[in-house]
Image 1 (cartoon, rainbow, N blue to C red):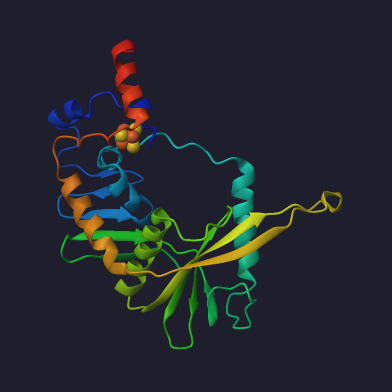
Image 2 (image 1 turned 60 degrees about the vertical axis):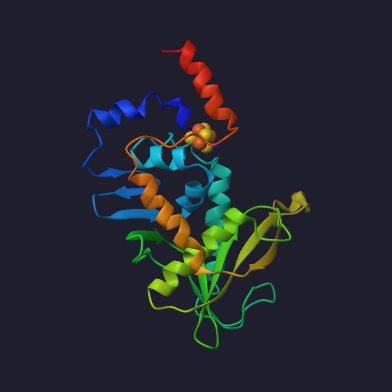
Length: 244
Ligand code: SF4
């Protein structure tokens, strides 16, 4: 689901008037130029989930962003600060998903798929350099752990693997590191977090199809069909008949 319906009036009209044609359009989904398409790792799943959402965002019709509740941003910042103490260390706690030297976050990485010509971009939460010289992907999540990595997170890990390999860093695997609030003694003024690694098999080749699909979608002059059964688009259609 996306929230573009708030602003989605008639993209075909905008397109046919040449508002976007031949110009650069930037959005959360990526940056379009005639020969250069960039897609962020975080938007890869939307290529699969709803081509219309992806197409609209790339045309500059991304939904307005909803600010995260302050407490979530605060938790995120605290987790990242906490993890910084391990950077450069190999004596990692037992809950670390891989053995090796913790390298912490990467800078922004880009890698281009020669077949589609699409460039993927993103920044990893953390990487562990394993004893055999490969790189283990670690992505932080503030949530309750699932037994298996869900498809949308697997796509994210695959995208990170593509970025590392495309920059000459072989990949050993990947994991989500869940930080889950637990019941605790609030009289001490603290909420404890349980840390759980959930490992996944990663494969950078799985992003090739969505990258090719991204190019095809972004080259469409007419918007793709909405996702079947998406209640938000149906609601938007109904609203459009009432609110002009
Ligand atoms: S069908 Fe419409 S509301 Fe639903 S995800 Fe796609 S573009 Fe967004």
